[in-house]
Length: 322
Ligand SMILES: CC(C)(COP(=O)(O)OP(=O)(O)OC[C@H]1O[C@@H](n2cnc3c(N)ncnc32)[C@H](O)[C@@H]1OP(=O)(O)O)[C@@H](O)C(=O)NCCC(=O)NCCS
Image (tube, rainbow, N blue to C red):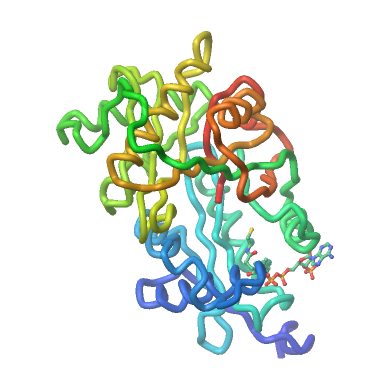
């Protein structure tokens, strides 16, 4: 008899999430968030948004399933941004909560970060929930700053912007553009690399990447998801990651980057632009407020180790690790 059986807890098996598991994992994600947030119809919660399939496609080996008696009861998705790792959505079917399923999924998640030589790992969670903060503390993550997920209505005719879209760059020139974006992100944090998101947005038709100024040395770039079936959801454009080149003039570059994202949203007839920012990035948060963004969701980012990474004052970066 195993320890789990002796303790009266069901045996939990953790393995890679396979394509046949995706519908079950998607249903569980909707029900779990719907139940936790008190949605009227948890089964339909976030039905216009796609995290499970798109993250699985971006890196199937980093998608994990937890099973009890052969049925999927939870999943988690690790993301590698070069030297930075984050994870989520981590979800467990409500009838299996508080039986150690999430904890079991976190063990191999941390193994992945170790195998990737990640120097900074993190996640976004609900700051008001002692359970969430306690769960992640158990694995060495520490809550630091609030992170605001903000939104702004998109006007009919936003400011013109000196920007190009990655999808319009000739395929032969794209690797050089990705290198240029990598050089920019490495200025924010050594080894930070968003190539996975740039490529996933293009390959999976999730959206596009805005390149501000010269694509060979961009003043900024922003990976945006557009509309239903992406992380944005119906009628929305979501800045998955955006950054202005740091240094003198970064505030102006950031303002222009946000204008370029608004333009992309308008061109796709999306009514809202959503963008998350750590309140540690004081100037970036204030700039978004000044540009008319209002907070709709407030959570906290937890970090491992308990260090700022690229969540610090002076950096004009949009992301929220959701
Ligand atoms: C959050 C969620 C993934 C947790 O899954 P779970 O399988 O119930 O979690 P576990 O049983 O593995 O771990 C729960 C841990 O919470 C912690 N915890 C619970 N209540 C706590 C409290 N009041 N204070 C401190 N820690 C607490 C404990 O560390 C506990 O683990 P332990 O019992 O081994 O000490 C699950 O509830 C869920 O799917 N929620 C909805 C979706 C969601 O919010 N996802 C996470 C987004 S960041």
